[in-house]
Amino acid sequence: MAGALPGALGLSAAYAQPLDCTPPHHCIQVSVDAATHKLDVDVETLNKSGPGHHVHWTLVNGPGQSYTFPANGIRFAKGDGGVGVFKCHLDPKNAHIFHCDDPTGKKGTYKYTVTVSGKPNPGALDPRIINN
Image (cartoon, rainbow, N blue to C red; front, side, top):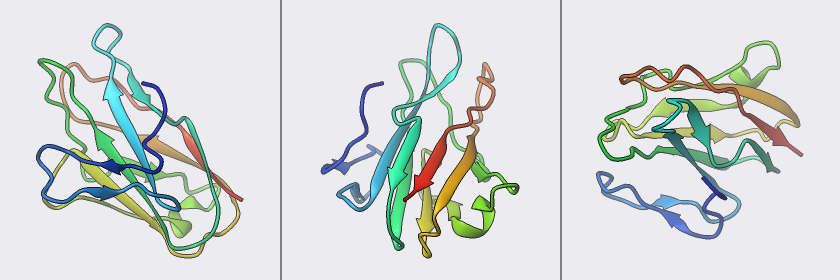
């Protein structure tokens, strides 16, 4: 997939409200390649700055796919401190949307793991967020 949705409102068909993707907030699309069955994100490394910014992940299924995020679909690594920086949760109304808040904006590079539920299992993907 090409490019995130900067300056736009991301909208999921099953989600009642648009997601705020206007800077300083960010939206990342997650998909599973139908041919390789591998996870993909449209922003492999997200560069952001400042506290109080939200990151939203939207899982986009292709034809015949029925993937969803599990409760731990976005999980930050403990070793680099990301667990303490980002406050994340699955959207209670839509298993295709995951939200993370960054209340402190603590500078650093934070690796996270994306996982989805569904068949065939695409495995995990490990992108990162850089707080400048």
